[in-house]
Image (cartoon, rainbow, N blue to C red; front, side, top):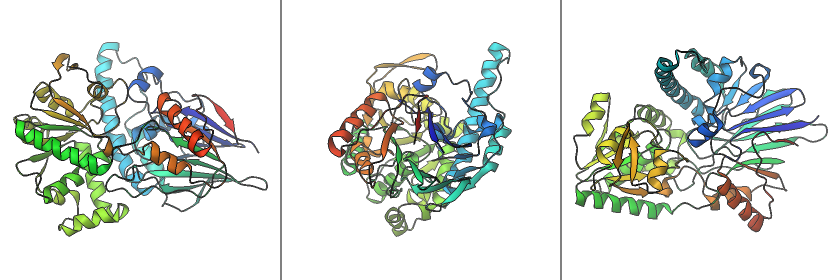
Length: 463
């Protein structure tokens, strides 16, 4: 029996994770992500798949982020009716992310329909999100289950966000099983709340992410020291601090660190605003899932009498309405505002940037990856003027990049994970920009004597 793997997305690009495993006449899709940022512009997603969705036996999902899950409603809309295997944490988050994405999609579509007369076929209908969630089959970490005849899956903790998994697919063969391991998004072991990533024992083929394959993250102690410095500088200037944050993972980590700073007496005079409805919903899920988080961090919260992230940060104010969000802009100083989106491509952060970006007293703290073509990337790259709501706005605020908060493994950690397999599996780098992939491939060759390949989108391998 011939096993084939098709690279359908996140090949020499960061977003759009999607891979098709064919084992004989069985077909399993690994992730079904949407393209974001410049990837979306370059690809021009039409919602078409190079296969018949109804022909799939199963879908295996590494985690809930939209660049790994966002095209599932389209897949179901086109006829997929099989199971979607994921962890329970992923299932809890998936509904929040897909429902939010659907609201945005249909709002934008209605606006577009006013210009083109509604002639375009919708990618999916709102009810397709509910169909996706009904197809989910949660599987505990380390439990091996059959997803199709002669194909089994097992999840390991990736340490990235709640429920994120390293995926091990075992294909039974004549005389010898073949093992495919997909890293998913490997977490940064220095971040808060998540457990350290795990490691499958063996593999024949490894798909490894390379988002930060060309750099290491700053030490967390140094990152937090710089964050304290930013707080002190902003207090002197009397300004606000804006933090564009991803609703899943990054927001919860920030709330935890701010809680620590509060109990250390560092946040005197500050108010913290959580101005992201989705971030609020996800924080609720994290607070209900403490048993899945890092025991040391949960214990430090309990030591302060807190059994969730809200109680750990008593000065936190959660906005409940658009009016509450708008009211924050009356603050000229003393406000720490956490808002989405994480790459400043939409959401409430844009309104706060509009009111603060031109102020010399303001600080913008970037705490995550910024894809090419996003406003967040423009700020990181030092653009002095940006477009907001059809207006040009001067960038007078101080822009800070705190890479230590990244939820992705850095180059050093990727090398550590790659070197942990028994034998000599074949490595394929995915989920990274070409420069990052090339840098990581070079270091893998020099330090580990591993010749990692960088497949193009559409490539097919046999194993």
